[in-house]
Image (spheres, rainbow, N blue to C red):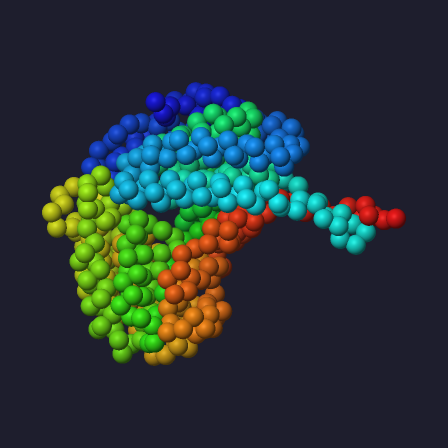
Length: 476
């Protein structure tokens, strides 16, 4: 039975300092499933004190000890995959098969990738007469979102453990259960007490206390750009490192010589995946203006086949969005797109046909969008795609880069050589060519207002390391 009324601090489940709870609502039914405890600054102080104590010994553990620990975590995690998937499905609405395979699977994948990196990472290397030493940065505050809960938790916690850091995690209050299961996994795997701590709570309370805390050496934050700015401002007086993965409005350039059917179908399906709740979703499809009508027809066919419904029902393609506030924001942006003159090709405002409750959004396609429209500027975070016409390749690149964001980009062309040329011109941290998936060993992160720092693989490990130069170490 998952313990939702306590926090995991210093290797034990403990009561909150002050009793305060919030309901966790199933977005498919709009009904509260249970309550979860909310923390305060006092709970953060306890967790930080535990992490600070544990850092003295854990930071001195050997590579072999950390490898053995990650291997044990992987073994325990595998045994609870279905439970993690079910929790994610219930709390954020992902279809159950998707939650089990991709949501829970992403977390496992990051731990396994980190293990591979750790086995051979050069923590020390000579540089002239100096020795270059990479050491754990210290106590980490981690603030994670609800849209890919275990993906984001694992890609922070695993490399922090590998680096020799200790940590405090604040998961989203909308998806607490998978994080609590993760705490149980780490406990069973034998993570030393105080190394990993979990405090549930709200951003303005627990998140703010973590960001401002003088004994936290680094904040790793994933969420909206607005919230990321607040975290950075609060962290500035203590000059702690802040690593952020924020919002996106990613362009998907489809050139005139690309396989139009394949590229458009794949691009639209990618946006609708996870109900559009992915920060790197290719939500701005940039196509030759002369092919707008043909592209719109292909996109409409994908939308018409996309079934929004019960996450546990067979045949469901997408579930609801996470909560009422998100649903209302998406509805307002859909209406804004109509008001500003975009052509509504599929979907639109309101609930999908046959649905009378739940935070479901109709899979929506807008064509004839210009890049100055609200729906082309703001992150919608729902199953809504905008199709923008470009005069030529140069115009497509210009439109792609005309955004405050820079998390991801996508390019489809008649040849990979042409796609590579365009990719080099896109100002984004990740660019996917010809429908390729992300490479988990490669870095993930953004340019501009999509954040700073990188996660995943070797680059994710290095976020949690300080670099020390010991001059004269190698002198004769």
